[in-house]
Image (cartoon, rainbow, N blue to C red; front, top):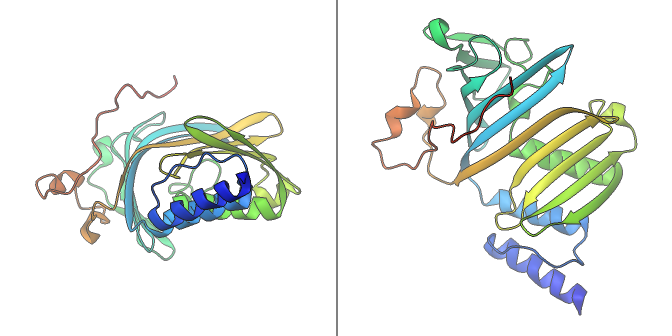
Length: 247
């Protein structure tokens, strides 16, 4: 009976993509299918992204307004960061091998186009802009389910997956991945990555706006996001809402 209830909840989620999952009998693969089904209904999304990373002897932290439109258009508006010229920076990816954007402050007027794997365009861990989206984390979950051990902790508001890859070298050197999924929306809201016991990356995503109808012109580094505010398209705000960079 409990198994039947679990699969009924899953079926309802896939068809409506808005039913929270609470059945304890759902397996990790059941949850993955529900997350994938939710993602299939998304054409564009925007959210507040807070990223912390350590790599190459460096530490970086950024607060970002993140915009995505299928198939893979990405825009990052950096609201704050711990490095010079982070605040006010914009990065745009529209496919291929190049990223277009500008630094903040006095560098704002200098629009550059560089290869996506150049240090200027990657995180300190070498991650490229096209690896920053929701689908990348979903594909990582799929890989880790097939190539590692997993434990699931069901909380009231979210589900926590803890993954232990069989071979960390094939998982970017990460020996433990922790992913949080919001129960109500089935969206990924947090990812912690560890090398042994050391936290080397943490990303949170919140304040999602789904399928607002983001236009193609937004994904141009010359375009200012505020130009859309009079169009009626709901947009995430620029207020940090108390979110801060760690000194």
